[in-house]
Length: 115
Length: 115
DNA sequence: GCTGTATCTAACCATCAGGTTAGCTAACCA
DNA sequence: TGGTTAGCTAACCTGATGGTTAGATACAGC
Image (cartoon, rainbow over all chains, first blue to last red; front, side, top):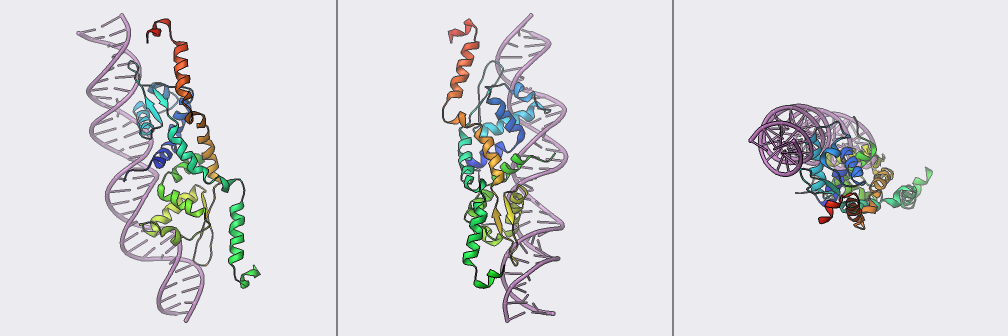
């Protein structure tokens, strides 16, 4: 089975090279060569990363002479973002710990009160 | 080189099985057997997923008789969340397109005005 | 101590991911 | 027309990932 969009997006941005590329594209579109410059990596390797990003819909490609500039398409990130957002109530506080404790105390039989 | 925390978190949640497990753990802690129940997958396979989640710090394990219950630890998600947040200015609007256009028009030499 | 239940580890297998080099194509320029 | 530059594909290699089955371990209860 082919992966859903959220999985596609998340595994695309799970790679630090690809995250760096996306960050770079926030400053505006760039050619493959420009994107490859900061990395000690062959151009074909970068091409593969770009293909993954394009497959996830995170970039789109143009065509300008012999350049094929990349442009950021942040839209798919939105869905991934809101998936993570579900958990935001769990990280600021340790309410989950507290809830769990309360739950255990409530469901505990009297013998458990020793602890 | 070992991957950074953000990469670790993102690749952990890039898998739909592991995302489902985390969702389940929002309702409270659960045993391995309970977590495995919804999936058509062997217990060892689930154990491996749990190990990945634990490695990313997304769950912690307890010990209660022969059970080893899992508990959600959402904290690492926070960092991943704020990484994505950087891009939020790009997805609601198409300002980035507009910016790119303006930029190109401004830096264009007079000959380019034909287009 | 024996039995059943929950969990983990080991070994194995297939597929995927991320990199390489070599070689091709397409566009610009002289 | 030929050279240079940008980018891509193909073939290959290695290590990680995601699954399996079989067997080990730990604990509860009789």
